Length: 216
Ligand code: E4P
Image 1 (cartoon, helix red, strand yellow):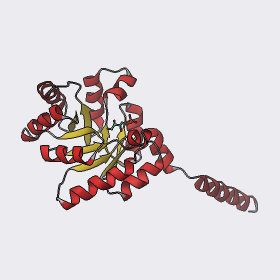
Image 2 (spheres, protein in one colour):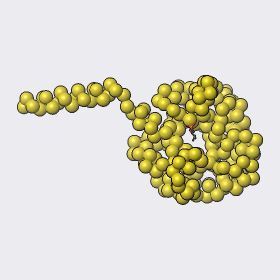
Image 3 (tube, protein in one colour):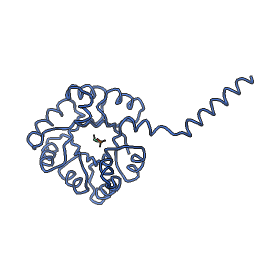
Image 4 (cartoon, protein in one colour):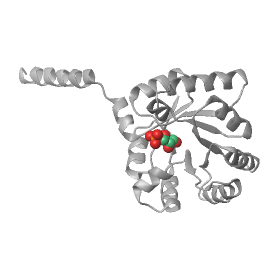
């Protein structure tokens, strides 16, 4: 499983990139709004230093509007993936993008059937939102496993992005359930690298080292 960062914050994206694990970026209208930046301007900035997939979401609600917006987003950089919300209009737009050779990430996926439809419409990626399913008492991780199994049986090459990740256990479980990618907020990426026994162990190594130096 690869790592994307779920962020529109340049500092966070650069920090993740420095770790050497970054395979892409996902943004959404809420993340961009939080930054208070001009959408296209921010995407230009991100794609100036990220060469991998950068998902940028359309906000139109009809297929024609999505297609126009998506084409303008795709023109920003060749690595822009147009993020399209799941739904009947979204599916029509995905088919058009797919025929035009523009990659799409179908977002707001909450069921296996939605993922199957998106894949058949030609989506490069589907994004099941596991945290939001957990929030309403469903099992988000189970959905990842179901989609992965379905795609394997039918030899579908659409990639599953495990999205709406809230904590490190979501990451482990996504990997075990067959997600190809997890898009992870910076806060969770930081948590992944940490363990209290690592901190205690390092402290002990350093203090033992200091003691041995004092005896010289
Ligand atoms: C994914 O592409 C979405 O941007 C994101 O994971 C949504 O997460 P949230 O439920 O924390 O808003």
